[in-house]
Image (cartoon, rainbow, N blue to C red; front, side, top):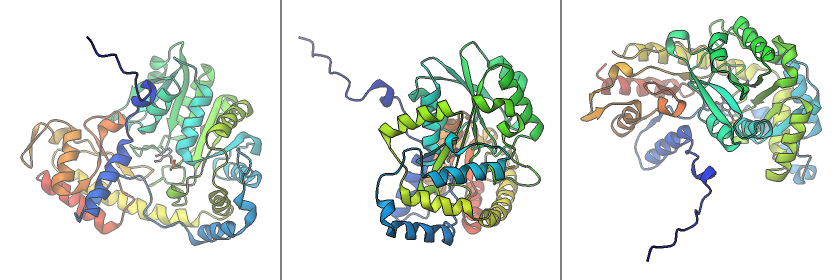
Length: 403
Ligand SMILES: Cc1ncc(COP(=O)(O)O)c(C=O)c1O
């Protein structure tokens, strides 16, 4: 007698989600560290600086105030939504009203809410690769379809209007745009941002623009906000942002989405049944962050600019490795194709997944394989870590690769 088929325990949709590769690499590195190994972690995308003290002080005061001990509006504290609208006008020259803002549990939650609010089954989203690992998973969770648009080092990891047009079909609902980019560090020029925005308007394609690295640009490269340059886009555009990278607040979990009122109201309804309001204390800390100046991020930017140059110079000295100089964010995204298909540390290394495993096991250096970003052959190294570790870590890579 055949055994009865057991009903699936985990749903197909959730069962298909891959663990975040960046968090997995970071977790493995931390586990090895806890076991006594001196692992150098280039995996996590977070500033190594503490959150500025005035922001922490605001949180301490907020924790002591009973008014913050209660539920608050799902969409965010009214004064914080106002502050986000004011900050967007200040930093992006994009005028929005507080009613167009939804405060979320980090930028990642804003990504999730946005796709849930916009996509119907089968809707296509054009996602330039290399892409941040979360986008395709969030699109799949909303029953959408990711249409990957590959880019390479040779074109500065940027898409063109021509390439976008080739990727467009009747099912195209949206384009995911991120500049400065995680993982490539590419920053689009003002002209390119405007051209892409105009293309989107002309074809009725929504743009979801992730502006989380807006303040981290180097060497004359500058961030520009697409809906500010192309105001006609406002009705079909969602801006994603948060405090994680600008104020060294990754652990506080505050982000936001800005969009047309109907989309924000739909996303707020969704959030009202999932997470409700974001932690009030973190929201008050965010208020202090946004009310202050950008001095702390300017200091971090100087340090990142220096470290990015050091890392880039060291990586490009390794025979077989090429790397675009980072223009923004805090990642180098070297091409390791020239060192594949040979024995490294006694292991036959055919791809960057294996290379990253060998680097972790033998050089005790954690980097994220390009496979996680839809770009095999490459890997991502964060340069948001101290100068000494950075130098030693890249040196260890060079030694293992025989550089
Ligand atoms: C491109 C991009 N967008 C959004 C986020 C989300 O950041 P958080 O959820 O920490 O606010 C990240 C974090 O790594 C990111 O790299």
